[in-house]
Image (cartoon, rainbow, N blue to C red; front, top):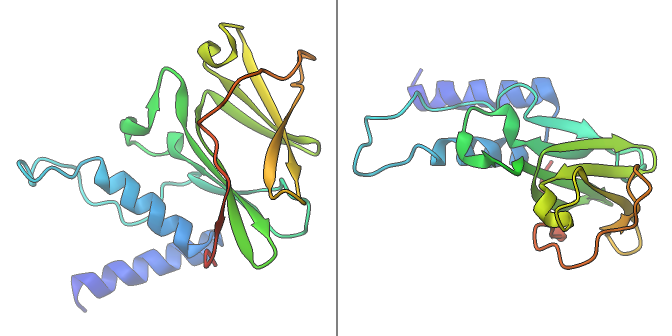
Length: 174
């Protein structure tokens, strides 16, 4: 058996065990390995990552449509390039019919999910130095996006543009 075929079999079996969409697994593996990609020193790197680390891709429920939504938590990887003083990169994909919408692409300190939405603790600079900086969203099915709402601390929604978050249609994750 060739090494490439063996790698492909290991990859597919790990994705099937976790039931995560194959497209998200490929993205996570690509991103982790890219951190160590250095043409000047190609031998100075850890072993190639073949499967997403445990807990990096997990099912969550944001849309409440009976289909899993998916969180890709880069804090679960050993790739420190995706974490900093503002937390770690979090990518949220919400089901929309047969497709998915990338509803969040943000670096946050923590992210929690509840029946009434998503809440993040972000760097205080995003909230005018309010600490803790809590931001909350509810899923707007008609708009296909997360909309800001008051956070659990009862404070009003932070104002201003948050360039951290995107919404775009993603096809073929499954």
